[in-house]
Image 1 (cartoon, helix red, strand yellow):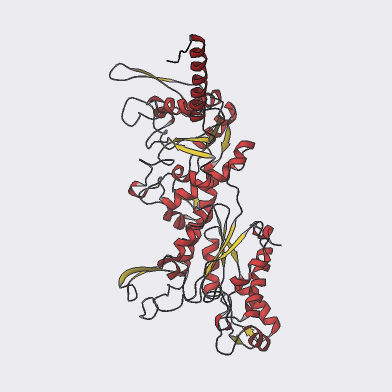
Image 2: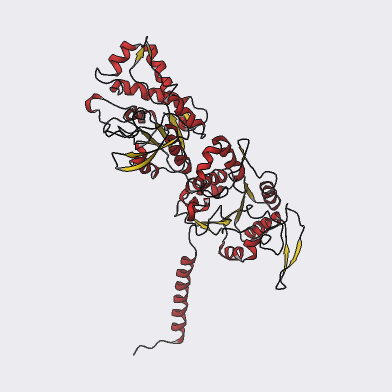
Amino acid sequence: MVKINSTTYFISFVVIAILFSSMRTALIQPTQTNIFLIGDSTVRNQSGTGGAGQWGWGTFLQEFFDSTEVVVHNHAMAGRSTRTFIKEGRWDSVLESIKPGDFVIMQFGHNEGSDPDTTRSGYRGVLPGIGYETKSLTWPDGTQETVHTYGWYLMKFIQETKAKGAYPIVASMIPRNKFHNDNVERANKDFGLWAKEAARKAGASFIDLNSIVADQYDNWGPQVVQGFFEKDHTHTNEAGARINAWSVIKGLQTIENKKLQALLPKRKPRLLLVGDSTVKNGQGDGAGGLWGWGDFIAPFFDREKISVENHALGGTSSRTFQTYGNWQKVVDRIEPGDFVIIQFGHNDSGPLDDEARARGTIKGSGLEAEFIFNPITKRHETVYSYGQYLRNMISDTQAKGATPIVCSPIPRNNWNEEKVYRSNESYGKWAKEAATGTNAIFIDLNDIISNGYDSLGSEYVSSHYFNDQDHTHTILKGAKFNAEALVKGIKDLENSTLHSFLK
């Protein structure tokens, strides 16, 4: 029998204890930074799964971060105010999980407006402002409660977050879908203002989320913004929530915090092209001698800094590119910081329900719609205007944190007295209206190319850029000419950074 003396036993016990302690420490000290969200239903609606078509922006914030570096914990709760979030013990639960170096983003304001009292309507109300005024309440069971100002509750969150060694970030409440004279109602004189003042007074970072989103809403107008709300004027649908999540990211990018800036999304962006055969003909291999301009755009860019992908599909219209599922495949690839160039129109002018293609759209950029039976899919379908289909793609792109760029369709080889026919009273005009109405970038590619064609003349253009059988699809030289025209349009943009990726 091997004998173990007490000294050997003690040393062995200490070594095992140290090893166990080291393993336990490794397990309870994750390398990720935590971002805790607290707020109301505009941050997390119900269970965060979009019940009744309503979503909070916090549900989608994780998508903008590398999950190996950042974990977003959405503790917001529908119906809560700053007061009830604390009163119900929700804040204490969050506070227990916060560790040094974490971030806490707080956004309240939608549920604070009632007078605080012991009625159902006054249960969550707070006193206005950021002062130290209080109101004493006695509940029917004899419980005493002291109600404070909106700013007081925010400053409590801020101070206790800082005490844990974490970084507090105050966001003003997102605007409701309420317009007055085509301008959305803002909170810059009450809860938005008080949120800013509370952040300044308590030494927290501030995101003016109310203004960031409201500026976009004003640019889009009430008709477009209505598409981001389903049931009421407060709660957004998925597209609206994604747009608001990206607005939070834009706000975070303005905060002077090196750790935060290092965590924000940084990756080589993509330039994704969508359109018809004038962007990519066939498989993009020059079959039949025909090419789209999208096949020759990549060499103009520094592909160490940006990648270029041509997802255009011949024969599609702005409608069928979406109804066939091609657009969703592109959306699934879009990430924050990407660029999406959209050019349709050549196939949109056909009938809505013909038995050959059924790819036409309603002419214009309005909100018109027509209910038809689609003989191709054998299903009923609501068909919208050309402009509405473009707006769908624009809003999806913006919701993913990317930049949409709409182009008017390139001109065909059709002439009248040595002037090429332009689309400035049809699809070119409607493309511009869809872009400007949704704060998207617009390149009048039709006009740029038409100017070039006019200067060269019909004989030269017909013999060098087109073949004898086709007046729509360019041959090699024509596609390269059109690609150069698009690059010219990109260089002239004042409100986009895409030109910075050109060689």
